[in-house]
Image (tube, rainbow, N blue to C red; front, side, top):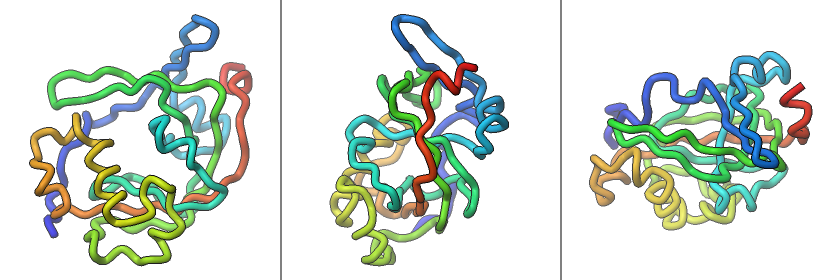
Length: 177
């Protein structure tokens, strides 16, 4: 497995979260949300993956992530995806109806696909509950930000695994107070 860290996005890509509610745009500072709700960042899910969230599950990222065990994270659904291709970045727009806080219960990084525990795969989302589905999901999620890597080579870099446990739902009105 290749341990060389691959650049997926600019250094601090998510300082603001953009929401659109009733045609009004809300640029919210992630640092303000972190202080207000005692969270340590945001984990973003595409529409396709978000609908399969569970109370407890494992989430996968390409190679590594910045998540830490026992930290809380804001979980948001991406309404309109953005992208970064090493030259240009388009900020995603997030859904105002589906905002949650989850606690990170497990973290492991640089895990080769063939070393992922079967119980972890079984307790993951429907879109990642087999190794084949997981690899296809990773390719789908990172097709723009990792377009400089051949899809056939992506498996060589492994995944990070984040265990998440539901804590609470947040109303959008609480975010903008």
